[in-house]
Length: 317
Length: 218
Image 1: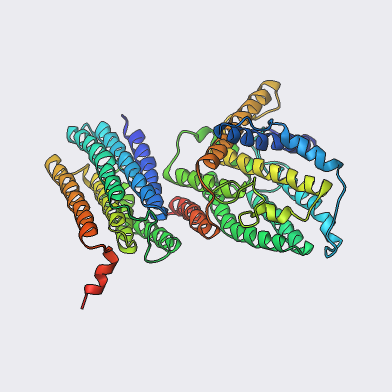
Image 2: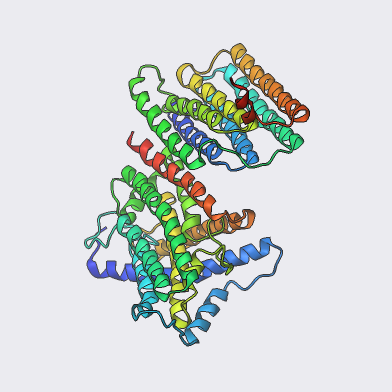
């Protein structure tokens, strides 16, 4: 299909808007699922939206030691995460190379790393002890997750011959049932990494504010009001970006090749199903495992790293 | 079943075997390692069944069935029973840190696949990449035996190694003759029984650990 620049931009913006709108719902769904598995009624799936709108109406309080840059951090984190969505095939997967290449998987992982870096810098900037601790822990996890994520992406990219995620999904879609051993290992690696990247239980606990256990939350303590809302939204979007990346790399079915209403409806349904399945996986794992002691986390992520490395090694050998 | 489908299925099952092997290596608790080796035996049984369906070898059906019954049900049950009886701590006590063994395992896999390139004449078309996977399982099983302190986890490593030998046999000769295969499985079951009883006896008469035997060396 011939992609002209304006439609391509419109598509990308539409996909980003869709991810932005749905992201808190995914978090709400996981929380509801967890509550149900614990025999609780749980908050409504719309609760994350209410939290966000509450935060947006609050004022901002800032630490005296924070520099002016601190105020810009929530916006930058959200911007980096949202830009990352532009590289993902959510509904469309053009068969040919795009006329304006927006970026590939390397840039996607780089943008997520940038968001992580900005958050850590913000936490250090505010000068709180918990912020520093949270930042150091988050960067330790990032150190293990990011290379493994790159290896997984490369392993799939080698088979498709491109690092552009949209093109990669389009090329792999017809091959869905011809999975080989490297694909399986890469999928296992990706599922392990997804747990870490979305800040879920074996690695991090998104519900806790207990100082000894929190990773990601530790960095958010100094933020308040609309800034905190931006970061919370960025966290929701990052979770959905990770899930969409898993879906794009390993289950690229149902993506629309053109803009007919039927294809788009089908793509929307497929997207919904894939995300619900992956979010259910997150909720089930979170309900059935205990959080790992922090010094055990490298062992858990090491499994993902080795799987990712082998997935690439088996593909090349 | 067509040859291509069988090759692909065995390839995928080989990937699953590798993954379960890594799970055994990364397991922090004794029970996890036992469950992982049971899952590995199930995948191995499936691989045997696939090869049986592809080649029409009746012996392989029997072997696949025995593998699933003996290695996926009886042996793990026995191990879990022993663990419950001796009431040891459930943590695995590695000699070297677990993530170091994971790195070693990655090296072993690369080595096995590298060696495989020079063994091209040995392997069959139907089993594809089964030979390096089998070699990997044998070597990583030995690695588990060498790097864990608990006798029970060393037994898990032995079973994993045995699974690897079975898979290698499948890769190069469509499985060993039925009588040999049954003999090997009986050997393993008997070995597990003897080791289980030994662990129980040693535990009940002298409260000691396998690692403590090191101090007996002159």
